[in-house]
Image 1 (cartoon, rainbow, N blue to C red):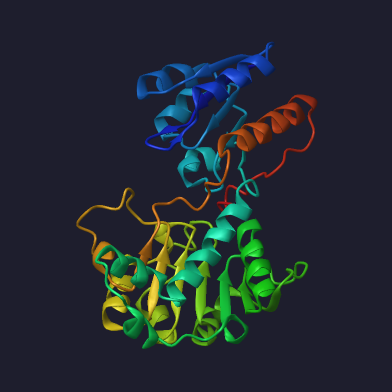
Image 2: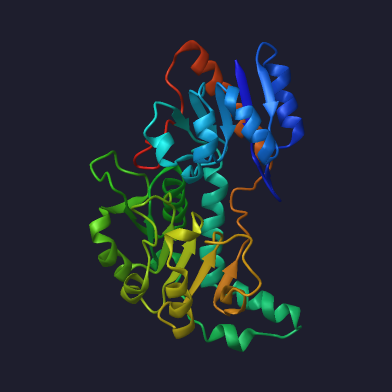
Length: 325
């Protein structure tokens, strides 16, 4: 079987050569090809049976006549879903669940840091300023009096909900399939049609859903207006889930109190972005998934799925290509 590995998005989303070598060692009967540039992708995709990648262009897919399955090294698969792939029989699987604990922990950390004004403390520390009086004027409820809204209850959102409930927060969740089994830690489960009602009650809003044609800019000016003036937004999902211009306006005008942001529409975040200078924003550079060894468990998942693929068994984490997750 010919397996093409093409996961090379600098500076950090690039599979180490050592992990590609591990695949070659553990799969001696298969041909493992590492395609690290555009020309190699064009050449190697043509004869690939399996693709281990994060993106594919329509012209690349048109050449890949033998392709039967794509394993994504990430949870999000938007880069693998041109219309030609969606309409084809090629199966897509993702890395759902691999880094959920780390991402959920990061989301809760951002929420607590912004609510407790730790981002202000760090800025004042750099200037050797004692900010006790300033921070004391920013009252914040304790966690047992805090309501969190988690939008998206996949493996990441469910983990966020469990962590927040464990701290004592009242957690409301929003998901499309409200009839499915209850999510531990979620006290109230609502459909997307109730989003603005839920926003009006939340002290912390966490975005933990995939980017699809239905979720693009799910939070815009009207949604920020619906939120409490004391509420904060945490985004550990995708930047394009938010109308960023509307978010900047909401933060500048005090429509919402603050934000902890790990994902942006353009990354790296450009130096000219207004987010850098907003005093009520805590930025982390899309690092929520990093904890310990990022790549080894992703490769382990691929190896497990490859063994299933060869046996004809059901694959783990099959993506509904029409829904986008």
